[in-house]
Length: 145
Image (cartoon, rainbow, N blue to C red; front, top):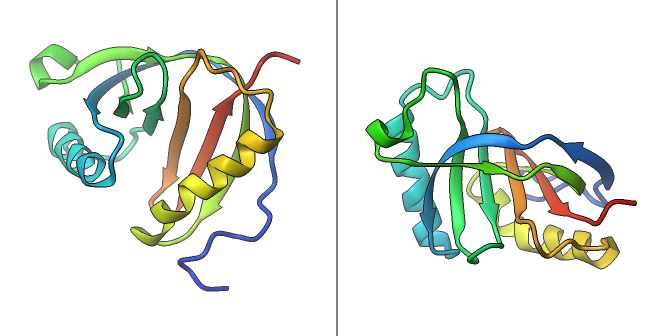
């Protein structure tokens, strides 16, 4: 399999997530702006070890939020970040694999596949959970079953 191509027919899972406190940078939902925001966040956070990173987009304002899960000793205001939370609840999820930056080009297609089978909850944002550099969980909010 080509490393830049996502695995064929990823498995779609139902998951329930807890609300997650985060620090974030809000930016336009455009690839250049998103890339710049990720670079800024990584410089602010410093060591990525032991941190969980998310991309969050959609409601309430359509912006893309580059997020890091907040830890007890974090101070978002001192680091120039905003603070908030990623809503919990029911989601449909699939995992995509591939090498950056090619993997990012497959995200919109995979989200479209999830939306086709989802009872989409348009009041909550969609989530990208960055498990590793080459593995991303895509989550779309759904109404409880």
